[in-house]
Each structure stands twice: as C-alpha cells, then as structure tokens.
Length: 250
Image (cartoon, rainbow, N blue to C red; front, side, top):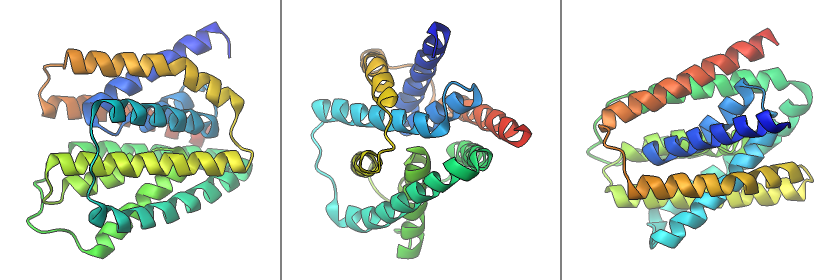
C-alpha cells in the first residue's frame, strides 16, 4: 500500500468511526464495505483489521463504563452467535479460495439490507420475541461476525425491538461483540490466517478511532436521530451497491 492508499485507509477509518459513534454498530460494515468497494484491501484483510479495531473500541468502552450485563438474556444468545461465528469462518475460508466475487456479492447484499433495517421506524414489542426468533437473529449475527467481522446489524435490530431498557441493550451488544471478536481473533490466529499487515494497519488506525470517540463524547453532534439514521443508511447503501456492482462485473 502506497502513501495515497494509507491516506484513503485512514479516511475510511474516520468515516467508520463516526458512523459507529452515531449508530452503535456500523464500524465493521463501513470499513469492510468501503475498503472492498474502493479496492483498498481484500475482504479477508479488512475483516481482520475491523476485528482488531473492534477490540480497541471494546477497551475504550471498558475504560469509561462499568459493565454489568444480563447474563440470563445473554447465555442463549452467545451460544447461537458462537455457532454462527464458526460457520461463518468456515464459509469465509472456502469463499476466499474459490469464490471471491461471491463473497463480495454476499457482503453487498447484507450491507444494503442492513441499511434498510437501519431506517425502519418500528416500535418495540410489548413482549419478548420467541426463542426461535432470538436464536435465528443470534445465528445470523454470528455468521456475519465470522464472514465479515461485522456481527452488529441482526442482533442490534433484534434487541432494539424488545421491551428492554437502553442500558441493557447497549451492554448486551457490547458483550456479544467483544466475545465474538476475541473468539474470532483466536480462531484466525490459530489457523494461521491472521496477517501481520492487519495488526500494523490496526495499530496505525487505533489513534484515529480513539480521537473520533473522544471528540464525539466531548462534542456530541446536534443531529436528530432520524437524520443520523438516514445519513448513515445512505452511506451504507451506496457502499453496498458499489461493492455489488464491482463484484458482479468482476
């Protein structure tokens, strides 16, 4: 990667960090999608960088917030998420070797679908969803975590539809993502598929992530929630369509 490539990478990191602070889960999606659409790095590499930076985000969160999650709610979610994560990593290994364009098409579809979910204005349910719905969302979340290091959208959408308070939801999402990325990191390193370049890029981008997080906390943007959702969803949709087009043409 030359100087212009590094500058483009750091620009993507800045955009992804802003989106993460605005929505709570968009970091990996924006990073992996824009990096793939702009041909900055392969999907597998950008997923590993997203994984490293997700753990940096988790460390920053732990420094500023005490975590006391609802383990009764989390245990079945984690069981399904971990199963999906392992399945996603197996699929990533196969697709990376034999169907790279297929991986790009799949990611593009997921990103466009996630952008639509982000702007759906739906009120929380009066009662908790059935176990089947919960396990399905958890499995899909784990699958996305294994494939793209982006487990956020399915689980975030599911939990925000439940009759739960905001603090419980945020802490559950934090624990799910942190454990998923730690497990993914261990599996990827153990299989010899973690690139040292991903660690270098993660270390380079970590100060940017920390700075954006600090500035967002110090000077929170005065943007209505609806406007934020439409802004980020538009960026995600554009990125997904770009990646889909490139993968289909390739």
